[in-house]
Each structure stands twice: as structure tokens, then as C-alpha cells.
Image 1: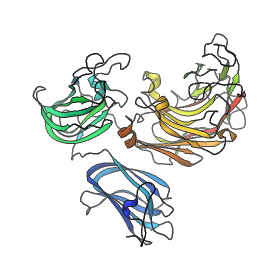
Image 2: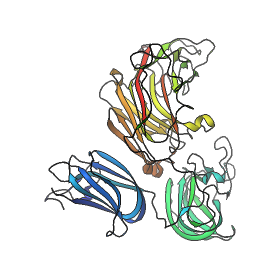
Image 3: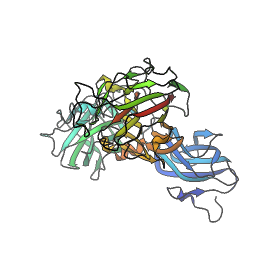
Image 4: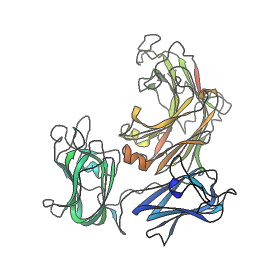
Length: 522
């Protein structure tokens, strides 16, 4: 219940809010319309928040199961990772933080969609498949049917570019034995099916349709089905564009079959967590970065950058608790870079440093933070970021995934950028946003941080959570989430390149990127 004139429960949407009566307990409940697998609840509190509350789920609105409980909440935006299922999800506040009631700007519930039944498991992992055709060329190397069943969100199946851009197009998985099939999850590439059927068969010849649509939406589709068979087929009859059909993932859930256990999920973090790795850069003045923690990358940069990265000649500790990565005008004889617009030379005219923890430290999920004073002038591009640890074992970019905790470019002095990159969204199409600090980012130290788990990433500057990227939103609007594996740390200070543009008459060198610390909590 709410006092007269208070916003109603339906107002728990962006720009409006729900508020309760000024007493305990109070509750807010959402009906999802059908029983769903639940993975995350996001609460965006108004100033009148709950210090103590529970989140519960129910199949019938009468019998409730606890998903989350706390007596020490601090308000703000809370992202709660949960496990369970239900049609109804209820927040019950039992202790108010103020003399007022409870008030929420948003009450968001995320899940896998669709329904599974008791005992259902992933049946399609690692299984063999067949398809109407497949692509294996420079644009999509090794895009075989099995890539849709390997549980790797960065690999895909695609129909042949020479024979497969026709209707119908199909892909079949052999579950190894007859199975009862209750859910199919399709993660589409932009080459998706507008019209298709999900079919089952026991002999790979005679097929029964258990799902059909003429309005497929692409991206991630979670389908509740009911059928049986050893073989499951996606049979596409109308393409979304002039290309063929392509799936990053084709997952089948149910009972029976001959399932192979997929690799275990990484353990979920608890924020803020415990410090597991750090570098405080407390070495002597002139000392290199700690070689037990960091490796220097050497040679010309990428992305049309103009620097030559040296073997720690440009990355030194200052004896005052900092690491300094310096960009300076300094030619490297015998090197080759894009032509420097100032000198007109194709020999690298600048040096800098880039260091990483590959092979020495990598991690999956947690809170990572660095206190940095960025460099800043025309053409400069300092960065603090993570790259998938499989990059150096043969997985190319962007399949390995990239998480940019901080990028700064001199031409936009007040902005700090945080962005994620994957095969379906990368480069200028990466997912992220800048934060406008209202002053030159290079004017002082700032703490750049990330909270990262299986369901979301939240980016921080100076403790301010300015951007959250949710997995469910990414999968349903942009493409696969490729961030459930180890990543390593990178610090670098670039000049020139596609993002910042070239140096020019206004560029002042040398320029220092100063790092006070880097810390990882899990």
C-alpha cells in the first residue's frame, strides 16, 4: 500500500518510481507471465531505500522461495545474481533506511527465458552436426556445424558464401540417443531466419515440427518446446537479408540423449571481494615494472598508431609509488609505422610503453581498479584494459574478447571511455559509453574500476558507477557475450591511431601516463 497521491506499483520504470507507505514491512511484486529461469535482479533505489530486505520467487504467488536476503544494504543500484525459477518475483522490505517508506526507480528481473523442467540438462554440447552447407573461407574460417554446439560464444556456423545463400537452409544436431526436448536456445548472427521451424527426428530422415514462426527476431531466441527425438534441426525458410543463415549457438535442453558435461562455470564473485593481486609500484626510481608481474610488449603499435613500444625504456617506476609510461618524440631506426603527419616519415617517430600480465596473471570475474593520471594532448591515447587470455594461444581478436576499463583521447579532454568488444560488436561498434568528468581527465588522478561477473559489467570512475552493461540485454540486442573466461591486464600509452587521430601542431611531448596502483579483488 502507498499513501494517497504516491506513484502506483506500475511506476517502477525509468523516469518514474514506486513508493510505499511509511511502515514495515512493504512489498512490490512482478508477474512475469510464466515460470522463468531467473539469473539476476537489479534494484535502482530512490533515496528511500531498504536497509533490510528479501527477494523471493514463486510459481503460484502463494508459496515463496528466497533468492536473496540482506540486513546491510546501502541503497543505490544493486545488481543481485540469483538462482531459481518462478512466475512471480517479490521484493519485501523489512527495515527502512529513512523515516519514509521504500521507493524504487527500477525493479528489473533477468533470466534465460522460456522454461525447463526438473532434470533438464544441456544435451547438445560437443555433439556432431550436419548442415545444408557451411562456410570455410577468409571471412568465416572453419564455420562448421559443430561450432554451433561447442558452447563457445565466439565461434559460429554459417551457410556457404557460394552455395548457401538460398532457402531453405538448415542445421541438425545429433544428440547421440533419443531425448525429450523442452527448450531450444538460438543465438543468431545478423544472418538469421525470419521464418523457420524446430524439427525432431529419430532417423535423421523423417521430421516432426515442434516449433514454427514467420516472425523470427534474430539475436537470442529462447524457445519453450515439447518433443522427442535423437536429432534436432533448425530448418530456415526465409532469410533476414541477402546472406545466408548463421548461428553462434544452438543449445538443446531436455532429458535423455547422451549428454556430455560442459566445462564448469567460473565461480561467481562477491563484491567488493578480497584482494588477490596488486602492484603498488613501490620500486626504486628508474626501476622497470616488476618482471614477475608484467611483460613489455615491443614493436610498432596497432590500429594505425605511430609509436614504437620499447622494452621498458619508456616504462619506469618513479620511486614515489608510481609507474610512469612516457610517450616521447624519438625515432627508432629500421622500424616502420604509418607516416607521421609532422615529419612525413614512415620510420616510427615516437616511443612509448605497453605492458601486460599475460602468462603471469589472469582472472575471471571480480573487481579490478587502477588509480591513474592519464596523459593528455592532441593525438594521445592512454588505456587500461583487459584482453582474453586465449589471445596468445591462437584465438584472434575480437573472438578473445576485450574489456576497456579506461580509454582517453586528447581530442576529448573531459571524457573517459569504457567499452566492451566481441565478434558481433567491436571497434567503433563496441558497446559502451564515455563519462564526462566536467574537467580535463588529465588534470589529476582518477580511480577507474570494473565489477564483472557472468551477468553484467559495471564501470566506475572515482567510485561512481556510471555504466552497467547487462548480459541479457547484450545477447538480445547485439550478439554473444564472450566474457566468461580468463582475461589479463594491459597498460599502455599510445600516440596516433584510429580513435584519437594524429598528433599535430598542438601536440606537446613528452607526455606521462602515471599509474599509482592496479588491484584485483575476487
